[in-house]
Image (cartoon, rainbow, N blue to C red; front, side, top):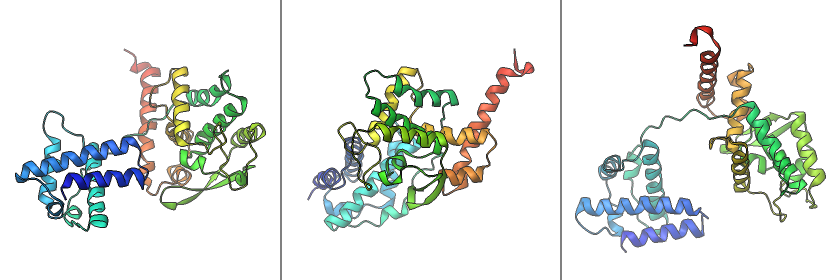
Length: 306
């Protein structure tokens, strides 16, 4: 079997069994084809399945170096994503086509400095939450649902997946929520009265009868609300409000943390509320807060004016 044929089988596996998105399939396919083409050029021969098991750590590092050069060099983040795709490809070759390769374990990806979170202001957050009710083309219950979801993201610092994991049996919402986040890590999140009121308003308006184990938030036709719907809704709302592209659903979680920090909350408490495994992840919000303070200083301090 040629390596290209194995690549096709892998992409079919991702599409049919792993339900990978079209965007993921495109990115992984592009990375795989570049990888195989490089190996063929590097070795001066057509690459077959057996050859994939003999790819050395040096060849993989040479491929990464090749991606860093040329007319369109990849950034460290893109390099890391390409290497991740190739690790997944070789994992498939090992499990499904009996072609293991131990060399990948010897290759480390580039170090990536995480970017600072990009929160929005308090006024912008309140504007996003209020805007669905002003849409004449949206039914009242849909507006109430969108407001409830956005209030959860901003008022409790939840990820989209965490907000949409709530069941009908979880409401009425108590004073605290037990949330299971990344890595099956469980945390307790206090719930503000405004969050409970928003969810109560949605439940009073939703036209469907929900079983206790059914998803709390429903789409227009009654199915479970999807993350993509929330993302598309916020994209529409930010366009109407003139907000930047950084105003995403996840930005509401960033804003929750940044605004708490600005109000005097300590990092350890914010770490617990967000469910971060490492304090260093939470410390990124201090960079945002410091930048905001510097901006306010430069605009307001008499000696900062030219």
